[in-house]
Image (tube, rainbow, N blue to C red; front, side, top):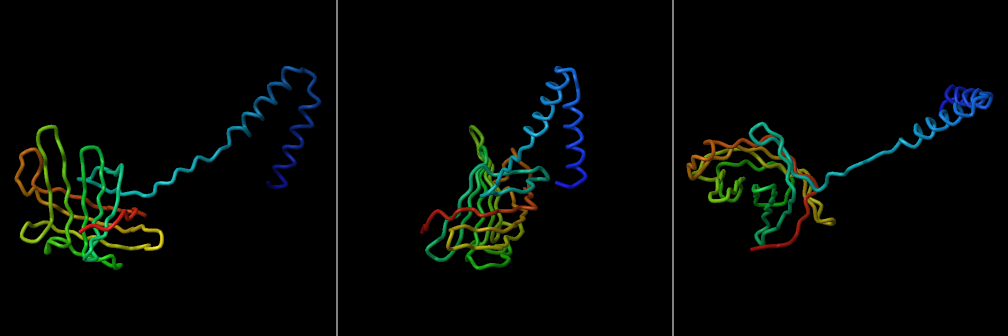
Length: 182
């Protein structure tokens, strides 16, 4: 607290004491209590988190997890209401993995409707493109972080959706690695 502020606060209290009207004293005390009682920090931590822009609209997962494959691969799954995104890379090594030319590196997105599903995918002979970058793999705490972007194709030509799904500015942060799968 600065000297200037301390002096002003001291003068305020001296003036308040000299006020003869008890109602004004109570009113001043109430405002001071309100002023100092309202100061509060609400910090919300958002980890783990998977989020980005899905067709230029902000999207955030409600739940996310990563699983290691016995072959060393990493599959990250992020779920939101009736939506599931999957990102797969062949390794947990830090770096950039290009999408669209391999079946071991891909991104997919599934919309589930009451009676139908809409499935988008990148992969070999399917089209689509993009990249997944692993920026941190914390084996000690069992988390993975990075970023991604992709253009996935509506592989079943379902008329419920467009031909291409665009996901950009994607980030996954401290997603927990929950186990190993075949």
